[in-house]
Image (tube, rainbow, N blue to C red; front, side, top):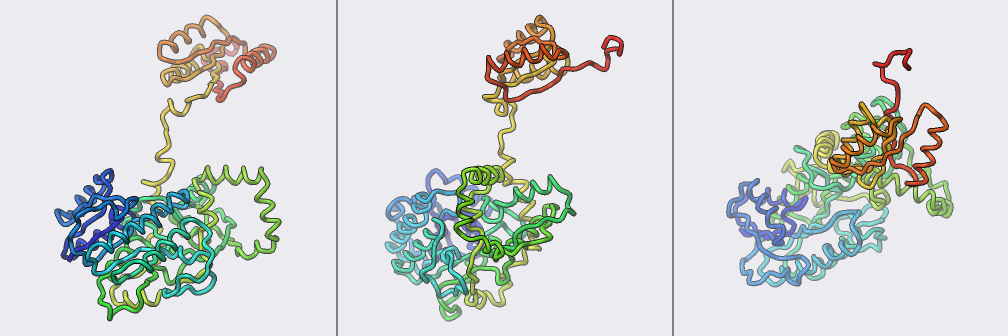
Length: 469
């Protein structure tokens, strides 16, 4: 049996490839030349040998830019897409719509037994009510580029694929339910930094108030991959319909999800959760007017940026629809393939995120980067801790204003700093004299406009006698 997979090294794709390798057959994986190393790493990790065959191509090219491919493909899996609420609209359109168009062109040009398209429950957009698996274009509002491009790509597949078709709509995909492994920050992960900050600021027992929110349909990636693999191989007489919702039949509310991860993080829980409908008492024009106030906008943007939360992720964190999944559940009955309760694996997701995906892990922590472009004032800079700090800053290329009582000693430190690559400025002052403090402060403001960092080391040493002090 032959398989063709796009997005083989992606979030769902690599787990699906692992499932397919448990069957007999060869897997052909579309890969850009620049990404060949990732596919090779996947093949080595899974022990694929020569059963995982790279096919050089590109989603951005007509027919994927693949020439001369003459293998019969039993199952063609299209998983390549962008799911990033922070991505720009044009990038999403190129990957999710035009990329799918080129995939369909290629699939229609070769011998394909069945085409499998991984869509998303995002196609439901802002639909309200029960969204069945046989529903698609219901005139629903599509509020974000991710919703609209996934809708358009599924529409394109439905209308243009020549081979028999099966479509899979996963919920919000999170990490592996056993290992916690995940390759990107999306969905609920955007709120992990907030939970982490709350843990650092407050004791675990401290009760918080927060939103109850709507239902958030989370599914672990291993469930999605196993479900697609199983349903894809079922004969026609064992499935009902051609579209399958891979969702949690008992989704939790936003507040419940936040509490599960707060528990995993040993952070305070949201003991009082406010129903989102209560905010509807505020007239929409008033709410919109408040959001439009520049100061409110600036505060909101600053807080979200500090917490690494894209505004789109906050605005599109849940769905109005309930998702019926009876066809998928019927196909999976008796297999043991089911969505586990979030409480059974939330700690694994949290632990993997904190060890591997926390944005602070990738922050530049070198002293050179931290003080780049900053002017630092060090008092007590002629000796002791102040002197050692000034020399350390010099090694990092820092610009340092040296303040202490004796010019000669400061000049000596400045010479050492220059030799180490620093940029010293000498300003003698007696910091026990208020008039001299005012003089040197005005002098520094006039010459430099101010400082970015002040490190105060001036003071009397404990080794100095009380009488001498």
